[in-house]
Length: 413
Image (cartoon, rainbow, N blue to C red; front, side):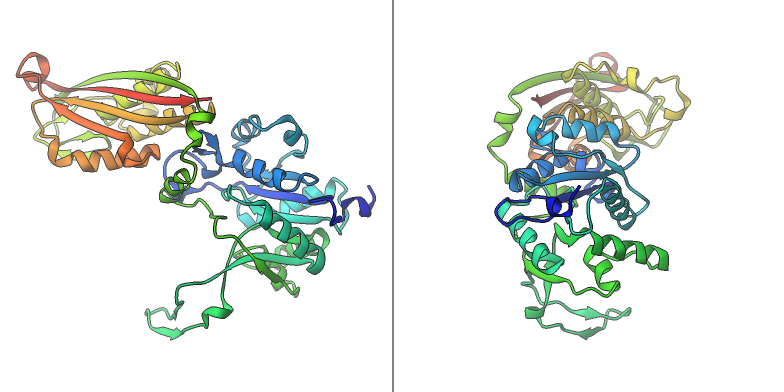
C-alpha cells in the first residue's frame, strides 16, 4: 500500500489515519461490574460509544482495538451494535500486554505488520473516554500532520503543589505552564513505534503516557487544545456523572422493560452476625448457607436473572460446588449484572424487602443500600431496601430464619 494513501489529506477528515484504542485494562477503580470499557453506560457499552464517536468524527479513518486476551467475547459484544459501515472500518483486534505501555506497543506493531507506512497518522485513545468530540479529533489530526507528535491538554485551574516524601511543599509550579493531558495522543507511526521499541529495549520503567515515551526517545511533543467534555471514566462516581450527561437516551436506546422477581430464605444457626446486602450486621445468631448466606443479595440476584430469563442463582453457582463454600454473595450479584450488560442492557431499579423479627434492619438500611448500589454501579436512588415482620407468624415470626423478596427492573435493547 502506497504511503500517500495513508497520509492525512486535509480535505478528507481522517483519510489514512488509524485510531489505536487501548482497551486491555482491568479498570479496578471503577468498582464492580467487570472491566470499565465493557460496562454499560445508559444501556450501551463504553467501548461501543467510544468507537462510534471516533469513527463518526473521522469518516475516512480506521480503528484497531487492543484488548485483553480474556475479553474477546466482551469485545465482540461491544462491536456488534455498531452500524455496518462503522464495523467495516475496524481492523482485527490485537491482544495487549501486562501494562498499558506494552499494550500500546503491541497495537502499534499490529498496525505496522498490516502494512501501514511510517507516515501513517496514529491517534492513541483510551477506550474509557467515550465523549471525545469531532472538534478534538480534527485538532489532533492537524497537529499530528504538522508536528509528528502532539497531545491534547486543558488548562489547570487549581494551584498545584509539588511535595516531598514528608508532605513538605517544595515547589509551586506556575499554572500558566501546566496542562492536564488527555487522549487521543497523535503521532506519526514510525516515530512513536520506534520510541516504544527503544523504551522496551532499554528496560525503562513504565512511563505515564505515550507522550512521555516520545519525550524519552528525544522527540519534541506539542500540546494542542483539549476538551473539558472528554472525561475519562475511572471511578464509580465518574460513571454516575457520565450517565447524567445522557439523561434522555435511556428510553430511546433501551425501550424493552423487563421485570424479575426473586425470593430467598435462610435459617438461623450458630454465629455472631448475619450478612445482609453485603453488610455485616451484628446478631446473636448467624445464617446457614453454602456461601455467606446473604439472603438479600441472593434474592436480588435471582430477580436480575429472572428479568433476563437466565435461570436462577443455583444454575450459575451450584450449591454443591466447593468453590462457592463461604463465598461472598456480591460475586453472584456482579455476575448477574454482567449478564445484563452483555445483552446490551442495564439494571434500572431494585426494590427489596427483608422479612424478619430480628435483627433490626433500620439502623443498617443506608449502609446496605449504599453497598448494593456500589456492587451494581447504580445511583443510590435506584436501590430501595425495606424491612417488615410477619407479626410473629410463621418461621420468621418464630425467629427461625430470614426471608427476602426482591424485584428488579431491567432495560434491554
